[in-house]
Every structure is written in C-alpha cells, then in structure tokens.
Length: 323
Image 1 (cartoon, helix red, strand yellow):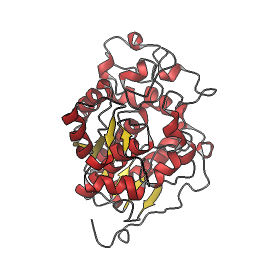
Image 2 (spheres, one colour; image 1 turned 180 degrees about the horizontal axis):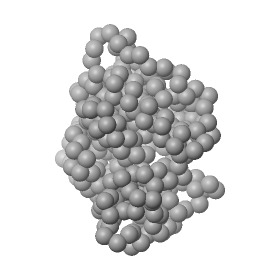
Image 3 (cartoon, helix red, strand yellow; image 1 turned 90 degrees about the vertical axis):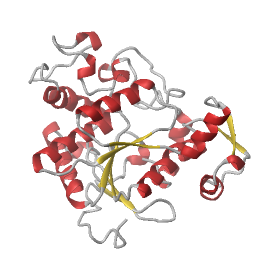
Image 4 (cartoon, one colour; image 1 turned 180 degrees about the vertical axis):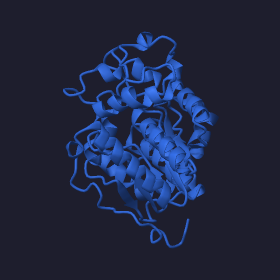
C-alpha cells in the first residue's frame, strides 16, 4: 500500500455526519447521492474493492458501481466475497452467476488456517477448535486482540471469536494481500445501531488493527424499503430485458412477468423464500414465507432472523474491522 496513505486522497470524512435517511426524502435524492459517492470512490482510490455478500445491500452497491464505471469509463473494482465456510449454497451460486453476468473479478477471502483444521478433522458447525492448533497469526488475534482466554472456541460464525476469525481476519488479510486502499461497502444507517454514526467516507487507518484503508459507503442513506423500491423500479428493469420499464413488484417467485425467470433477477433466491437478512446457514432463519420486500418492514426488525449474540457484539466487532 502507498506509503503516504491517506495523503493522496481528497475526500470529506465528515460527509454524512449527523444525517439519517430522512435527509434524503425521495428515491432520486438517495440515488443521486449514491452515484456521487460511488464516483468519488472510483476516482479517489488507487486500488478499491467492493465487499459483496450476495445480500441486497451489497448487490445494490455493486449495481451502482457497474453503472458509474460504465458511464465514466472507470475500471470495475474487484469484488471480495468473505467465505466463512457456513454459507447457504444459494448464496455462492448467486454471486458466481452475477459476477459472470456483470464481468466482475471475484476473489474469495478465507481464513484458510481455520478452514484447513476444520477439513482435516471433519468438523461440523458448533464443534470446538483448540486455540493452540491455530497459526501464530490467528492465535495473536484470539489472545492479544480479542483477549479470549478459553482453550477452545466453537466453529460458529455468529460468535465473538468465530466472527472475528472467519470474517474480520479473512477480510483484513485480503486487504493486505491485494493492497486495497478503499473498501466500498453496502452498510446502511438504519440497519444496525452500531452503523448509525457512519459517514460516506470512513477512515480505518490504525495499522495495529487492520491494513490502513477507507470505507466508502454509498447507500448509507437508504432504509430497507428504499432498497427494495430501487431494486424493483430501477435495478431489475434496467438489468432484465423482459421486465416492465415502469417496474413491477412480484408477490412470489412464480409471480414474475412473462419471459422472466428467477435466475434472471439480480436478487438472491433466499429473499424470495422469505429470508429478510442473510447470514450463515447455521444461524439465520426466516420467520415467514413471504418474500422479504412484502414483509412488515416498518414494524419488525430486519435482522431478527440473525443470531442475536453477534448482533449484541456488533459495535466491538466493528472496532476490530468488521463491516
């Protein structure tokens, strides 16, 4: 990474400070801001990457990147997918399909040390992993950074140690390996309390915690219903030739317009199946069979189907480099 980082940048780290989705009252306002932030991200950073989970927020972010890159002639950044070994198969199938469709260079970030131990010993989610069997790098994170004292930890994503090793360490190692200076991500102000104070350009410059980089966050100003509104009125009509130009909101996977199959639509099939928020296959559940966009978005919690022990630790995990 450039030795003078971040001096070569000209971004406003206070942009978005004190704001919330209500400061961008209409979808065109939100879209305009997303495009401006995305354009600045592609202009300013020498080697940006986009975090892609296959979820609606990161996929929407990737859509804006595609639009801006094609309009202004920028190179598309690499998409980084964190493979934590506990994904729904439909998620990996989805990202590989749309990486090919959108001509995106896709790389997998993995904690291969943990993965190798799991494979060698045939572990299942929830089985214990001895800390002493980890590499020196991972043991440092467990003992010195997390200050975890137990001799073992469970092979589970949505726990303090599991999330840090399988996602945060994997991500930070990928940032260093690929010399990434700007991480474009799809976090939103309204999604989780720990993200409510984020700005559109957020510095992560402490080399003792992570490879110095910035987070570029184009869709902070969207709430959950906004995301679905943009998908069905802009993203899908723009992406799917047979989809009505004026938009259409299906009530199920069987309710798509004539000539449109579910695989044609850049929305994970898990959302069609009723999942509202996507995490690991072990600890994410759906509470209804209704597609995510038809659920009671105003009166229920978006992340209710996720493991709440990790949700409770979100602020501390973000301090360590989690998205």
